[in-house]
Image (cartoon, rainbow, N blue to C red; front, side, top):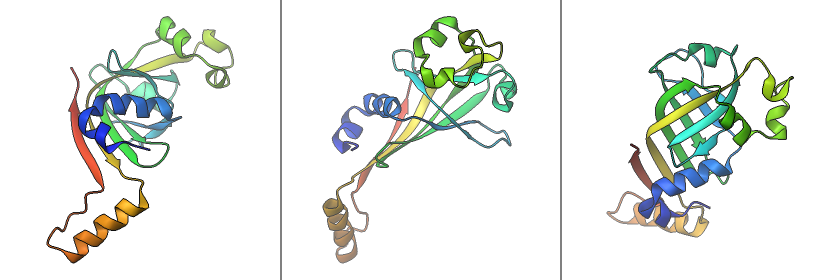
Length: 167
């Protein structure tokens, strides 16, 4: 359950915690005609970077050039948290990061394991994000809708929206 208090007071921490809890989000290249695609994130909040395993022969990997910007969209596992992150994308076959995030699930996608010749990583250096956290309380939601419909207060208070900027 997304905490509205945390969304107001510690939105960056909440964002990284939410990313750590999901299995996949949607990654795409800004301005391209390619559709976004599901990718499993490996978050490094200390460096504001998200790492993704991929193969060098994918359309996504082949479209990345120096300075390429991307977006990564997140829906929290309880569907009460949404985020869209923006940043630069870079292909980085970093052996230390490959080892750090490697799992049996990842291994299933690479015939030759960590030595697969097509294995590489995408590093997304996050520089900004928008987050939306909403209540999952049916009672609070109903109360806010009723207030909005029966008073001059027309906007129900059922969530928090924040814009975040990262260095």
